[in-house]
Length: 204
Ligand SMILES: Nc1nc2c(ncn2[C@@H]2O[C@H](COP(=O)(O)OP(=O)(O)O)[C@@H](O)[C@H]2O)c(=O)[nH]1
Ligand SMILES: Nc1ncnc2c1ncn2[C@@H]1O[C@H](COP(=O)(O)OP(=O)(O)O)[C@@H](O)[C@H]1O
Image 1: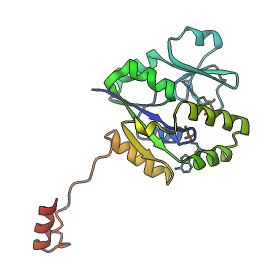
Image 2 (image 1 turned 45 degrees about the vertical axis):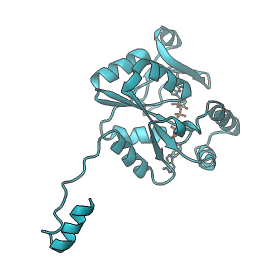
Image 3 (image 1 turned 30 degrees about the vertical axis):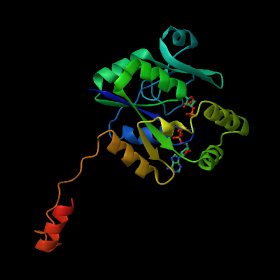
Image 4 (image 1 turned 180 degrees about the vertical axis):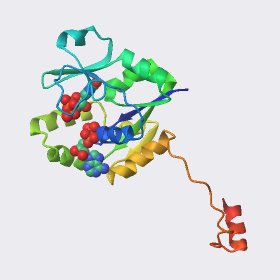
């Protein structure tokens, strides 16, 4: 059964960064529509579907939001198309988006909570240049909608306070994209004596 994994969690927990890393492993992400103008390095259909305000109104969106005068939203068609075509696809979403995705996808949806502490969230938002008003608004929204507490209900929890690569590896493991190398026969490699190897076998 094709699966969608939703990354959820507080702002600046690293959801976008993790999805960018997963793209290097050809793991697709749901692409939102926006009325914002593309930046020079952004591609239509990869970063967003860039559309006019009139066009934006035509889509059936499962959730939408306005940031700095621009509209953003995830279309039902995008979700259903990706889930039909891709064995695994990813989406970063907020509380409302998660509720709507659950209604649409039922047991095809699993959630991964990206866990960071409060102080780290604030430090990262300051570090990336967000202004105080935005930080306050986003934290207030996160508190009000329980974004710091979603570890309670998520299917999986991944901590992202160490190296990003560690969190990415854990997400890869959850979505079944890490294969272990073949098990080595330690006794025949001479690493363990035959009796040590035998006792290890028993303990596994
Ligand atoms: N709820 C919701 N938020 C979105 C969607 N697409 C983008 N956003 C959020 O909109 C905000 C602005 O995005 P963007 O203009 O790309 O700026 P940047 O990510 O801050 O560089 C970010 O916080 C995104 O996470 C969407 O489909 N739904
Ligand atoms: N493991 C990490 N260590 C240090 N900084 C990180 C880590 N993960 C993410 N960040 C930084 O935190 C900020 C927010 O990350 P982002 O992926 O945009 O979060 P979100 O999508 O959850 O809002 C970015 O500036 C990013 O570089």
